[in-house]
Amino acid sequence: MNKEEQILNYIRINPYISQQQLSEKVGISRPAVANYIKKLVQSGQIKGRAYILNDQETITCIGGANVDRKAIASQTVRLQSSNPVNTEESLGGVARNVAENFAKLSQTTSLITFVGQDKEGEWLLKESKRMNIDISQTAVLPNHRTGTYTALLEPTGELVVSLADMDIYDEVTSKMIEDRWNHISSSQMIFADTNITEESLIYLINNCKKDDCQLYLDPVSSIKAEKLPEDLSGVHTLLPNQEEAEILSGVTIKEVEDCSKACEFLHARGVKQVVITLGSSGIYFSSKENQGHIAPPKVEVVDVTGAGDAFAACLMYGQLKGESLESACRLGLSGAAITLQANDSVSPQMSAENINHMAKEFFQ
Picture 1 (cartoon, rainbow, N blue to C red):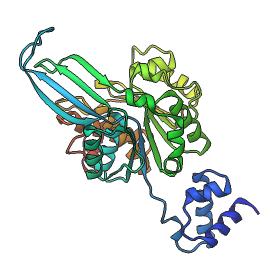
Picture 2 (picture 1 turned 90 degrees about the vertical axis):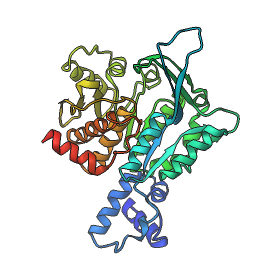
Picture 3 (picture 1 turned 45 degrees about the vertical axis):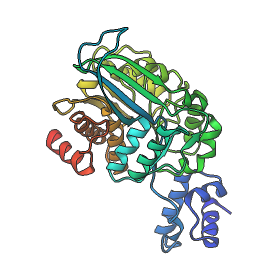
Picture 4 (picture 1 turned 30 degrees about the vertical axis):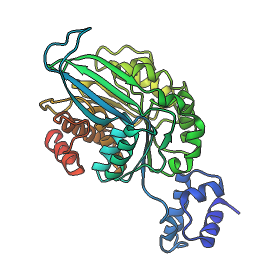
């Protein structure tokens, strides 16, 4: 019995079987199952769509979710002394920010992160639920503190010192990712950051390759980028900034043109698509079909926090809707521009309508 016949037989037995369950029973990837089902529908052997009701077109975000605290000095900071400050507290973390942006884009979104059994963790989970983010796969680790990031800023907004308590992510194991693999692999797209351990990142990348999953990966920082394995063929799209791209490719980027060579090295490591973010200079994108530089919309910058996360979410949204990498990057830059104009790390103005409007206004 060939694969197509096996799939048809399982559907006869259980019309509500999910594509992930079919994948496990037949021994092929979920996207391959979807292709077989499409052919069966086109040939008329399947009438109706009951069998896919258990499948949601979910975007799963894996990685950091923290509580961010800012202490803004009322006057020039004096070290080794008490300083009057105004404090602000908000939710942050790369994967969490990306998930919130997806939710604002009206996409079904799941967040896999790791929090402590403390008031910060409770707040993070409560707010995620309120935003319609699925947290069913998030792990609560009783004897650890939820990640926090604390920054002391001058009245001008210049950073004096930052303090990161992220030890909880050292507890993430590949077994934790493995236990959630059915959920992860059934997602239409996967976003991950490098806050999780090297062990868990390698498991994620290797299994995305094996199951043909679309993994979008943000290296987060030059130090955390070093966790990534040499073989990146399980990564569909890599989203480094300039410094991270230099670390991962070994190419010094002095001009925009140098990005092309850096991308060549990253493609050689197996990455299908590379998008290098260049701050105020925009982005450089590269795939086997096309490559090039795109300048960003000119806007008045209020706060840069979260702009990169918005870019990643809006780029993925564009590709989810069938846009080319170049067109999706324009949506990403539009999302980043909207975020730059807000005090929040995720702009209240983030929406599919707004990013499409800005992309049409600026890029056409």
